[in-house]
Image 1 (tube, helix red, strand yellow):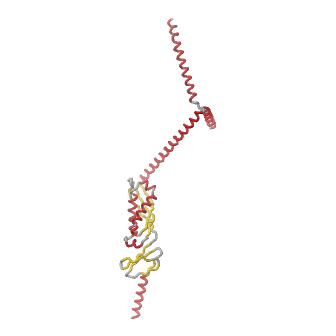
Image 2 (tube, helix red, strand yellow):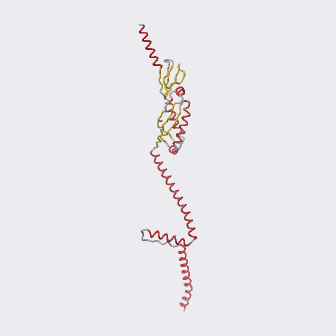
Image 3 (tube, rainbow, N blue to C red):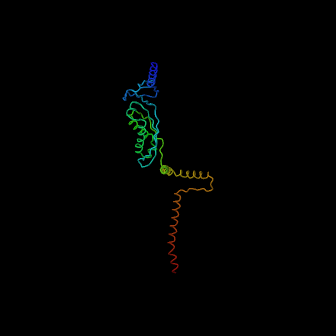
Length: 272
């Protein structure tokens, strides 16, 4: 009988000894509660816990990658989009992560979803597509501030996908096409304006020397003759046409005057 008691006692002592030992990995910490009250944070390595009096809660200090589920939201310009993101965070203070919140993983996930909807809903669709870096920083700053009391550090937030309705995609494509056409017209108009200014300067220089205009005519003829064409267009200066027109007008005036002077003789001969 005494040996039986000794054996049972030894088994109980060994069981309590093994139950009191905990091994914390390098990236783990143990939040120790003594009779329900916080006592200390232990680890890493081998720690001793008094069975039935102390309780050790493991906390992982590694960075957690959390996929934020897709959220349906309406932007400031009344466009319905579907957005999802990824969240990177880690526990810096194990005590606050266990005591101040029931489940810091669930709490962080729910907070990330609501923050994603509220922040992106304040911006227009163009900002959501073109300014993702700034939006990521805004969401990260808000989450980091609100989770600080839980002992959590939000390292980064990345918006992954922005899904838009097919009709809105076509509307955006039309808008982009119209924008490109507008830019093309503006560039063309600027080119015409610069070309007209150059032509004015060239005309002023050519008009100062009459010989330069003749050289320009000859250069144009040389360029036309170099092409494989049977038609040669010979440019005629406008002042030559003005001279021809003035000569024609003088000739018509002389003819009119001669006709008027000859009309009385014709009338006298008819009377006789």
